[in-house]
Image (tube, rainbow, N blue to C red; front, side, top):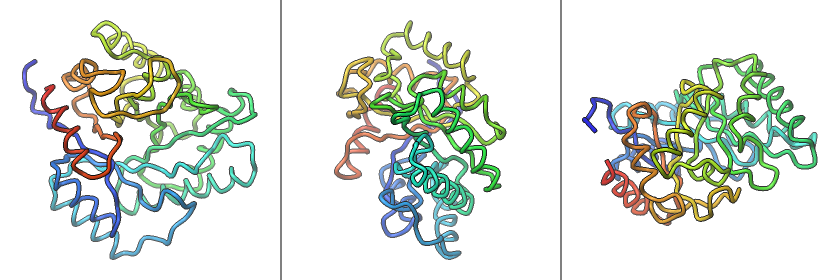
Length: 285
């Protein structure tokens, strides 16, 4: 395929230990052009407000770096589909806080796991997620867009079908602040096959029909430890799982996705693991 002028936006989820600005330096050290971060501890509902000094240090580090795209990921504790009133209240409040933090840092996208239905019927839980997002957006003006992540469908997790994301989007009063983050492991586990040119093309045609490619703003690059349709969320190193290298070659040579930031969430003990997976990807192009 002919080379285009669009730069490769590739990187990984990077730690913010020592401050968000440190994630920029860590990402640069392994050649990232895109990174994903948490803006606070992922294990806590809330964190101390960002100081002006922290915000400025992050913005300056980003400006002076080769990192072209930064996205944030919301805490996994957040569950807008919960039937527990306390959990739901905390989730909405925490999401609003994370939106504010992203806006302060100038981060355009916040990836969200929409939630789990628990004992609630799926359709009702999806309606609740849409309603909660409307309330969060109303209470939290700003420039940051929430990206609903495609999920594997493990347990009672929502949004493992494209139609479920579409239902939330259609019920939104703030469509301009909603988008999609596709996770390759999750969609594969949910039953969408990306492994051959035919199934790859069919998937994206389906995505475009149900959601529209313009809603896709980020991609998580993960192989899968489990089989197609397993609905098991188990990430694997690129080319070492059930998805295999051919699917990632198709994805990374797809000109219609060239402008989308792509970040690894593969297993890692150190940055070297990310660097190795990035090298595998670059060899495919």
